[in-house]
Length: 412
Image 1: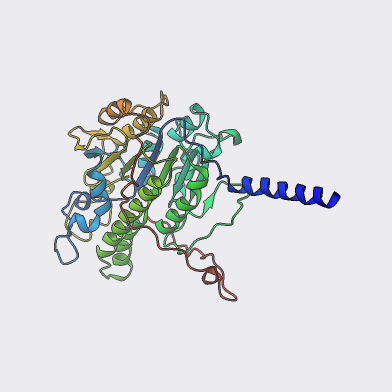
Image 2: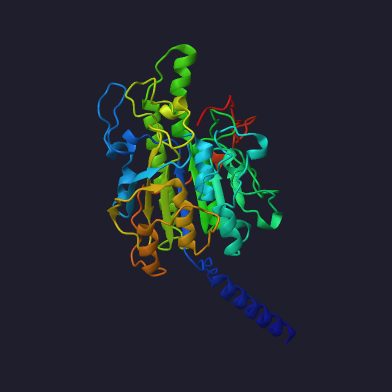
């Protein structure tokens, strides 16, 4: 009798365990509101995004060859070709400072401001979203190739309870990461990493953190342009525009990978706005000695209005309710953060820019989430299956982490 009861109890226990094992894990919690992803691609010249690029031999380079993903996204959303930078210096740090704060940051006029001014002087979009939406550390994310963007992303002091995930260059603000950082390519310039490693960080961190506001920066193209100038100056050789164009092709592909990841994640699919822009243009002169810099703005030293050459940039918005058209209006960098704040339902009183009506008005009338009955059409091919585990084991004496090869910082 005891043996029978023991066998019966064992059978019941196994049945309960098996039934529990058969229950699928609960799906990831969907966000209460919409999400926004802002992608910043550094230093795209007007000739390239306007379809007037030429190669080193002077032959036209079709936009469909350089920006196939950007062109496909244009067919799904609002294209804004009349956007201008809001800073008079025409370089990266002032541009990103204005974009983050939604206003001109008067004390940031170069990539190397005084130590006391190397910060945001006004509340940033990331700070306001974190506070007003009552998001946790993972609710806002900043993943960039260039290190200084983490420094200007907030108004100090940053209290631990107000902090958000920041990963810029080879460093992040995660105090004790569960997994050590892995980098696959050495960087050319100091305090930055390659855009490939930035994408790997996006693909690694975003699915487990699911930020409602995500800012991504890609910087390789601008660095390749400045390398042309550096090679000319140091060895008198023609580095060429080919490398700049290749970096733009790469970043366009990475933009497609980012879109793929968003559409493949139920947290983001049909509920996310993607906004793409660039921090500055380049000199529109055909002289190869000129396009590598940002434009006449560096020589003119204009402090009262945006410079020529580098001032003309673009923006693109895709998401629920966004119309498919080319906007005729003119906009500034400072309009981007107020627009995103409006999409998220966040007030941003310190910003001086205005929400872009062509984005926020249709978005307010769009349904919260449009269900899809078929898998979304991705813009790039799905990644290849991972190699067998044995192929990932490093050879004896080697290390899986690429040591960054640093050189002096370049103008951006």
